[in-house]
Image 1 (cartoon, rainbow, N blue to C red):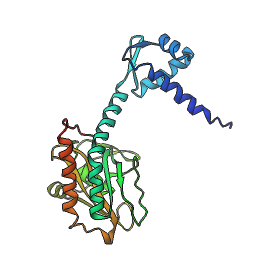
Image 2: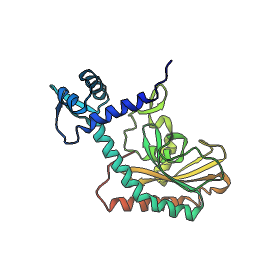
Image 3: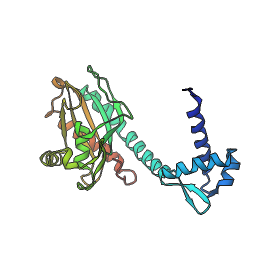
Image 4: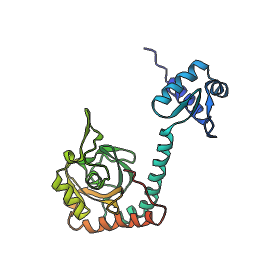
Amino acid sequence: MTRTDDFPDAVIARVAGLLDEFHTGDRLTLSELSTRTGLPRSSTHRLLTQLAEHGWVSKRGKAYALGRTPLEWGALARNHDRLHRAANPVLHDLYSATGLVVHLAVLDGGDIRYVDKVGRSPLPLPSRIGGRMAAHRTALGKALLAHTRLDTARSLTGCTPGGGARIENLLPRTEIARIRERHIAHEREESVPGVACVAAPIGNGRTCVGALSVTGPIDNVDTVGLATPVRLAARAVWRTLSQNEPQRHVG
């Protein structure tokens, strides 16, 4: 098989060029897009068809416009950026106070997605900014699942290779109730051997925009003693967010 390393770059450049033409918000026809981008009409039509299938563009009659996907991603990025900016100073303060790695995460289907990470651990941790991990195996995920506004009868996609899973199937009802009552979640060696974690949701009980946690070797993680500082840190982030415009759920 002949390897063409430049082919993906060429495709990305063509897609980016097409999407850039919608920056004014105008509806454009196939002929207009082909002329503006310099792409053959057949190639332009093929790319637009694929973009429409994934929601990046929409078609009405003979004209195309931006679809819902880029708008949703833009809103999600703005929410994550506000959360990151509000939480980052608090994460550094919590790291200074505890000496443990501090994480910030949001719920992404049946996984958590790490938004920020502060500090270093003597044990190797698989977490990285932008990375994912199964929600029910982490304290962050448990805090988010227990406080999510999703109906518990609704499936969470991405939980299993074969489809979705319900929240009550990921966490026992007793654990969900305990986390909601205490606003704190724990995890011991469920995601990484020798590692423990304490997490708290960021929200007001009705809305949950994310969660933060402290993580470290089991012997260094006092789950009782760390509960209060972790909860206070989460409340501090929520206060900062609440001072701005009302936040939509981003997990």
